[in-house]
Image (cartoon, rainbow, N blue to C red):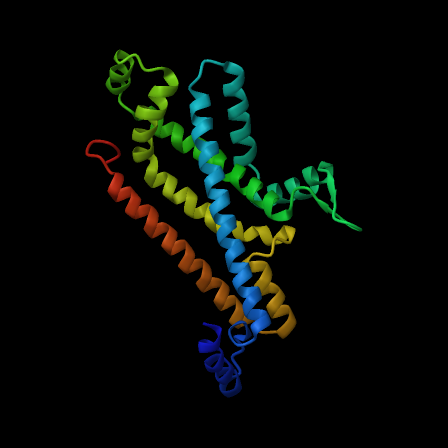
Length: 248
């Protein structure tokens, strides 16, 4: 791929001065690909963690324990009412200061990497919204459906896993789609704790070669393309899982 596009972009630079060096300089090209892969991994990890937290948190809100419900509500308020960038800094510099260091043979590295802290922080941030989204979906499941599952002698967890959650997921999928897309875009903030994702890498490129407009264009197009594909996939899933009378 690099060999195919490099001559074109090198010739473009010579003729117009437009410096897309990530497409004709092998070192910058490799950095660009690495940043793209890390951005995609971060999006996937944060989204997956936020979904797990949302599902478990919504279930915990429905149990009888007042203490557990209070803890979930406190978590929601704390992480919905603080900026995600502050949460990233808190996890990395605050909690990170108390995590052990690993001896790498002459030097030490944190047990939890910057990438892991970013995924944890962003997953918890998105999960706070997902808990409420899933809760709204659970509350929209008709009572006769729950009574039918009780008549089959299903336990509360079996009812939740096999009946309530699948229906709630279909009902709240439009709201969930919006939140997951927003979370995917928020992962760009990971550059503040030096995660070498796309924003961080392209910032290094334009700092070295002073080609800010070109790299900003690449950064803009990258997120437009990735988020558009994610949105298209989620909207396709929404149409496939739609049930008459549930969320329609």
